[in-house]
Amino acid sequence: MFSVKKILIAVLAVLLLTVLILGATNRLSQPGLHSAAPSPAAPSPAAPSPAEPSPAEPSPAEASPAEPSPAEPSPAASEPTALNYDDPGNWAYFALGEDKPVDVFLIGPTVDMSDENNMDMGNDKLKRSFEGALNMQRGIYEDSGRLFAPYYRQMAMKGYSLEPEERAPYLAFAYDDVSDAFSWYLEHENNGRPIVLAGFSQGADMCYRVLQEFFGDQDLYDRLVAVYAIGWPCEKSMADRFPQIKPATGVDDIGAVVSFECEAPEVTSSMILPADIVSYSINPLNWRTDSTPADKSENPGAVFTKKSGEIVLEVPGLCGCYIDEPRGALKVTDILSADYPPGLEILPEGAYHLFDYQFFYRALQQNVQTRVEAYLGQIALPAAA
Image (tube, rainbow, N blue to C red; front, side, top):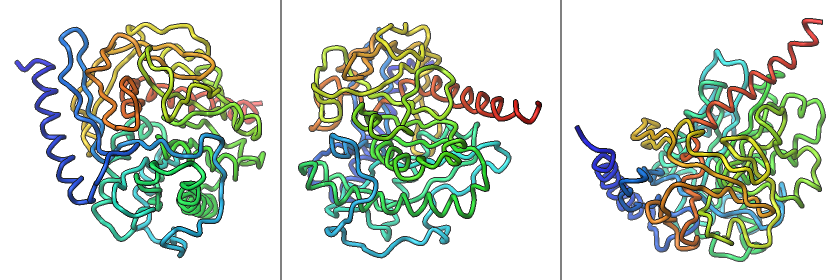
C-alpha cells in the first residue's frame, strides 16, 4: 500500500511535467503572481503536504491595493471589440446543474502567462487552462447551484510586474467582459433566481467589482445568497465605500462576503496583504472574525485535485488556522511552510496563496450548502405566513 508521501511525490512529478509543457506553450518568461502552480517539496511525515494547485490555476495578486474600480476605460487593451455572450463558446460553464435551486456565477483566476496584456480569446490552449482552473474549485459549488462561468479577457500574468496605476487599464478591460457576461446572465438566464457569486484571486477581485456595479440595486441584492471572494482581500476602505459589500460575520449570514488569504504565522507582509492593510476576513473552520484559533481537528478536509476536478489527495485535519488582525491574514497552523512553497517569486516564503481554497475545500463546500439552505429557509418564511 502506497504511503501518502509516495502518492504525493508521484502526483507532483506529473504536475511538474505539465507545468513545463504549459510554460513552453505560453512563452512563460518569468514567474508572476499567477505563474504555474508550484511544485512543493515532499511533505514531512508529521504533516502530509499535498501541494497540488493546477498548473493553470496560479493566482494573481491583482487589483490595485485600494478598492478596484468597476469599469475604467482600457486604452491599452489590444482587443476593443466586446465579447458576445449569446455565443456559447464564450462560456466555460453554462447552466450546469439544471435541478439546483440557486445559481453560482463563478469567475476564474489568472491562467494567461503569455506576452499579451490580456487573454487572447482565440487561444484554445489558454481556454482549456482556464476551464481546468475552474474545475479545481468546481466541487465546492456544484452540489449547491447551477453553474455559470464566462471566459473573459483577464489581465495576463505580466501585468503584475507593473505598478498598480499601470496595470489598472488591463484589469478594467478584463472587468468589461465580466460585466457584460453578468449583464447577459441577468437578462437571459437569472429569472429572479438566488445567486452565489464566487471567484478566486483575480476572480475574487472581479467579484468585488460586480458587487460595486450591480448589487447597489436592492432588488438584486435581495437575491444574493453569498459571495466567496477567496484569495483577494476585502479591504475596509472598499467596504466603507460600498454598503452592499458586507463582510461575513458568521456561518450562515445572507448576502455576505466570505474572504480570506492564507499565510504562515511568521509572514508579516505580502503583495496581496501588505503590512499596513486593513481587511475583513472570516475563519473558514470556526466562522469567527476575531483571532480565536480553530484546531486542525475542526478541518473536515483539505482537497487537492487534477485540472479535471478529480480528487488526487484528501487530508482531513491537515491544518488549523486563526485570523491575524487587523491585516485580516488567515494564519495557517500545523504545517511546514517548506512543504508548501509559494511557487511565485513575487510572494514571500510562507505565502499560501495557491492553496487558499484547497486547505479548506470541504469546509467551504459545506458552508456554501449551509448558506444556500439559510437563504431558501429565509425566503420560505413569508410564503408560509
